[in-house]
Length: 319
Image (cartoon, rainbow, N blue to C red):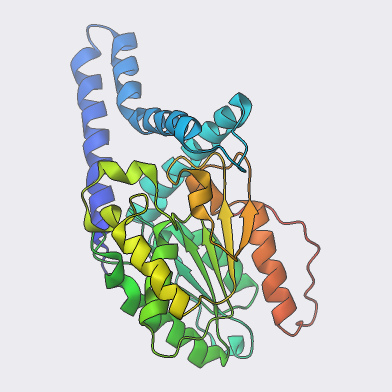
């Protein structure tokens, strides 16, 4: 597990700056008007939820159509509430301060059982997967959560990190692993696949991955964000390479309330098992109980049962 994360330091600085501004406003305005002081501090702390609301409105306007049903007003409101909770847990706690809290699980007792490689997305680090790491460790599966660094490099840069994780899990378990990826992480996995000499993977699961790009990427000039623009040259080249070297079986989760990846159909792949999760926003999609349940089913069917282990199909949401 890496000792440093540039993304964690960046998020720590952002949290510190936002908290300092809020406290400074409170100290400055409290004597004059406690109500004004509290309102101003709350406004500073609510910048993130306001941005989420704007993203969802844009996604609803530009992100659907065709075979994907447009979200209802109720779905958008529920998606905003849900994503706000995940935003604070993910970007204000897990990734800046708890990104090393859950270690990779590489125990010899995992031999013979399918392992899992977890690949996060843009502006994220391995802390994104803390709940998944706990769950997979409890179930006895080897698992590694990669840390894609540097955070704003070309997506091709991350292929070596994924290759190392796949090799380690394969060596321990004696079996090709399943790769679970969120957002840009799915593109990093595809970039690794085309560059790997002899890759072996049981299944690739992508969650809210902009396989054909996303409208919102036009607002960033970071190298990896530019690659994720709608129908970018990089994405077209990736698709051409996969005609010569087809991907392994893929499951692609997508939603009509994805506030980052839209149009919604851009998160699907031709020939993949494309799964629609209506009303679910971008980060929340990775922790949706349907996504977890399908992975557990796949792992359970692939592995010999352990004594006392069973699966009922009902699983709570990972948070």
